[in-house]
Image (cartoon, rainbow, N blue to C red; front, top):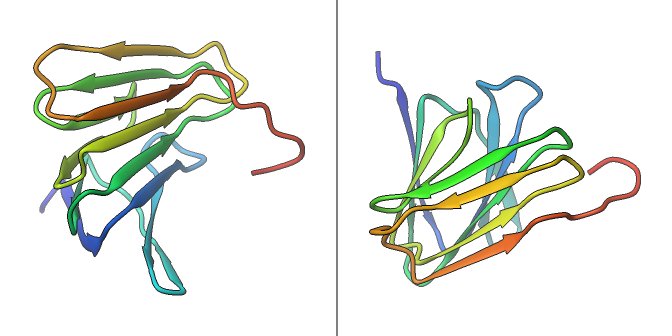
Length: 122
């Protein structure tokens, strides 16, 4: 049984954590349609070139990590690997989040939004 969920064909992806640590919902945007998928141990995203992966945290304390070659992980959740997605945006929410970026990663741009305050539900 494979522990990798591969998603391809979009320029940009947004990964939203599920209620459980083994859940996530990447949104694959094409024209006007959005598809939500559950994650596995590894979520492999392949873009169409020049796109962005946005990884949203939770309202709890999250530990984000960016590492080689083009991977992102929130501690305890699936590893997100990226192909032809040179930009990653990490969105922390109301928790006391940490962000670790190691050298040797393959991203061109890393955006870190440490505290995004929301009202109501997201």
